[in-house]
Image (tube, rainbow, N blue to C red; front, side, top):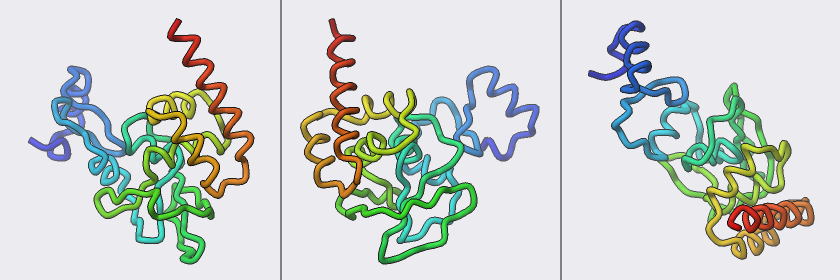
Length: 172
Protein backbone atom coordinates (compact mmCIF):
# COMPACT_ATOMS: atom_id res chain seq x y z
CA UNK A 1 0.00 0.00 0.00
CA UNK A 2 1.31 3.44 -0.88
CA UNK A 3 1.81 6.02 1.91
CA UNK A 4 -0.64 8.42 0.25
CA UNK A 5 -3.38 5.80 0.51
CA UNK A 6 -3.00 5.43 4.29
CA UNK A 7 -4.90 7.39 6.89
CA UNK A 8 -3.02 9.87 9.09
CA UNK A 9 -3.22 7.44 12.01
CA UNK A 10 -1.82 4.58 9.92
CA UNK A 11 1.03 6.75 8.60
CA UNK A 12 1.82 7.97 12.13
CA UNK A 13 1.91 4.42 13.47
CA UNK A 14 4.16 3.29 10.61
CA UNK A 15 6.54 6.23 11.30
CA UNK A 16 6.69 5.30 15.00
CA UNK A 17 7.39 1.66 14.09
CA UNK A 18 10.17 2.76 11.73
CA UNK A 19 8.41 1.38 8.65
CA UNK A 20 7.90 4.79 7.06
CA UNK A 21 10.03 7.93 6.95
CA UNK A 22 9.54 11.44 5.66
CA UNK A 23 10.95 12.47 2.31
CA UNK A 24 10.45 16.21 1.81
CA UNK A 25 6.68 16.74 1.91
CA UNK A 26 5.83 13.06 1.41
CA UNK A 27 6.82 9.73 2.92
CA UNK A 28 8.31 6.47 1.71
CA UNK A 29 8.80 2.95 3.04
CA UNK A 30 11.91 2.44 5.17
CA UNK A 31 13.06 -0.59 3.16
CA UNK A 32 12.97 1.30 -0.14
CA UNK A 33 16.27 2.67 -1.41
CA UNK A 34 15.91 6.41 -1.98
CA UNK A 35 17.73 7.64 -5.07
CA UNK A 36 18.64 11.18 -6.15
CA UNK A 37 15.73 10.98 -8.63
CA UNK A 38 13.35 10.20 -5.74
CA UNK A 39 14.62 13.26 -3.88
CA UNK A 40 14.22 15.54 -6.92
CA UNK A 41 10.64 14.30 -7.39
CA UNK A 42 9.98 14.81 -3.66
CA UNK A 43 10.83 18.50 -4.03
CA UNK A 44 7.68 18.87 -6.14
CA UNK A 45 8.97 22.07 -7.70
CA UNK A 46 8.16 23.19 -11.25
CA UNK A 47 11.78 23.45 -12.37
CA UNK A 48 12.65 23.96 -16.02
CA UNK A 49 15.77 23.84 -18.18
CA UNK A 50 16.99 27.23 -16.91
CA UNK A 51 16.97 26.08 -13.27
CA UNK A 52 19.81 24.32 -11.44
CA UNK A 53 19.31 22.94 -7.93
CA UNK A 54 22.41 23.94 -5.95
CA UNK A 55 23.83 24.45 -2.46
CA UNK A 56 22.50 22.38 0.43
CA UNK A 57 19.49 21.36 -1.68
CA UNK A 58 21.87 19.74 -4.19
CA UNK A 59 23.73 18.11 -1.27
CA UNK A 60 20.35 16.73 -0.13
CA UNK A 61 19.68 15.36 -3.63
CA UNK A 62 23.10 13.66 -3.45
CA UNK A 63 22.07 12.18 -0.08
CA UNK A 64 24.63 13.92 2.15
CA UNK A 65 22.59 16.64 3.90
CA UNK A 66 19.19 17.31 5.40
CA UNK A 67 16.68 19.10 3.20
CA UNK A 68 17.11 22.85 3.81
CA UNK A 69 14.07 25.01 4.49
CA UNK A 70 14.87 27.11 1.40
CA UNK A 71 15.94 25.46 -1.84
CA UNK A 72 18.73 27.28 -3.70
CA UNK A 73 18.07 27.39 -7.43
CA UNK A 74 20.68 28.87 -9.72
CA UNK A 75 19.40 30.28 -12.96
CA UNK A 76 21.51 30.53 -16.06
CA UNK A 77 22.63 34.09 -16.77
CA UNK A 78 21.46 34.01 -20.35
CA UNK A 79 18.08 32.50 -19.39
CA UNK A 80 16.71 34.34 -16.39
CA UNK A 81 13.82 32.34 -15.11
CA UNK A 82 11.17 32.76 -12.50
CA UNK A 83 11.96 30.69 -9.45
CA UNK A 84 9.16 28.79 -7.69
CA UNK A 85 7.95 29.84 -4.24
CA UNK A 86 10.08 28.44 -1.44
CA UNK A 87 13.24 28.80 -3.49
CA UNK A 88 16.04 31.35 -3.40
CA UNK A 89 17.13 32.53 -6.83
CA UNK A 90 20.87 32.63 -7.38
CA UNK A 91 22.17 34.29 -10.53
CA UNK A 92 25.64 32.84 -11.07
CA UNK A 93 27.89 31.31 -13.67
CA UNK A 94 27.38 27.57 -13.63
CA UNK A 95 28.98 25.63 -16.47
CA UNK A 96 26.58 22.98 -17.68
CA UNK A 97 29.36 20.39 -17.58
CA UNK A 98 29.36 20.82 -13.78
CA UNK A 99 25.71 19.75 -13.61
CA UNK A 100 23.89 16.45 -13.74
CA UNK A 101 20.46 15.72 -15.13
CA UNK A 102 18.46 14.01 -12.39
CA UNK A 103 14.98 13.00 -13.44
CA UNK A 104 14.90 15.86 -15.96
CA UNK A 105 16.13 18.50 -13.48
CA UNK A 106 19.62 20.02 -13.47
CA UNK A 107 21.51 19.55 -10.20
CA UNK A 108 25.05 20.66 -9.52
CA UNK A 109 27.52 17.75 -9.48
CA UNK A 110 29.02 16.56 -6.20
CA UNK A 111 32.22 18.49 -6.98
CA UNK A 112 30.43 21.73 -7.94
CA UNK A 113 28.14 21.42 -4.90
CA UNK A 114 31.21 21.22 -2.63
CA UNK A 115 32.72 24.28 -4.36
CA UNK A 116 29.50 26.26 -3.88
CA UNK A 117 29.17 25.24 -0.22
CA UNK A 118 32.76 26.35 0.43
CA UNK A 119 32.03 29.76 -1.12
CA UNK A 120 28.55 30.43 0.23
CA UNK A 121 27.29 31.70 3.56
CA UNK A 122 26.11 30.47 5.92
CA UNK A 123 29.14 28.22 6.22
CA UNK A 124 27.86 26.16 9.12
CA UNK A 125 28.15 22.60 10.44
CA UNK A 126 25.61 21.33 7.89
CA UNK A 127 27.71 22.73 5.02
CA UNK A 128 30.98 21.40 6.47
CA UNK A 129 29.57 17.90 6.98
CA UNK A 130 28.09 17.87 3.48
CA UNK A 131 31.42 18.96 1.97
CA UNK A 132 33.27 16.17 3.79
CA UNK A 133 30.77 13.63 2.48
CA UNK A 134 30.82 15.02 -1.08
CA UNK A 135 34.60 15.26 -1.47
CA UNK A 136 36.81 12.29 -2.32
CA UNK A 137 39.65 14.20 -3.95
CA UNK A 138 40.69 17.42 -2.20
CA UNK A 139 43.03 18.38 -5.06
CA UNK A 140 40.14 18.16 -7.56
CA UNK A 141 38.13 20.52 -5.35
CA UNK A 142 41.10 22.90 -5.10
CA UNK A 143 41.39 22.96 -8.93
CA UNK A 144 37.60 23.36 -9.35
CA UNK A 145 37.55 26.35 -6.99
CA UNK A 146 40.01 28.15 -9.26
CA UNK A 147 37.90 27.71 -12.39
CA UNK A 148 34.44 27.97 -10.79
CA UNK A 149 33.89 31.63 -11.61
CA UNK A 150 33.14 32.33 -7.93
CA UNK A 151 34.50 35.58 -6.45
CA UNK A 152 35.44 34.11 -3.08
CA UNK A 153 38.33 31.91 -4.26
CA UNK A 154 40.71 32.81 -1.39
CA UNK A 155 38.02 32.27 1.26
CA UNK A 156 37.01 28.94 -0.31
CA UNK A 157 40.62 27.74 -0.35
CA UNK A 158 41.06 28.75 3.32
CA UNK A 159 37.91 26.87 4.28
CA UNK A 160 39.03 23.80 2.32
CA UNK A 161 42.44 23.86 4.03
CA UNK A 162 40.77 24.12 7.45
CA UNK A 163 38.51 21.15 6.66
CA UNK A 164 41.49 19.15 5.46
CA UNK A 165 43.44 19.96 8.65
CA UNK A 166 40.45 19.06 10.80
CA UNK A 167 40.05 15.73 8.98
CA UNK A 168 43.77 14.98 9.51
CA UNK A 169 43.42 15.66 13.24
CA UNK A 170 40.37 13.45 13.58
CA UNK A 171 42.22 10.51 11.95
CA UNK A 172 44.92 10.53 14.65
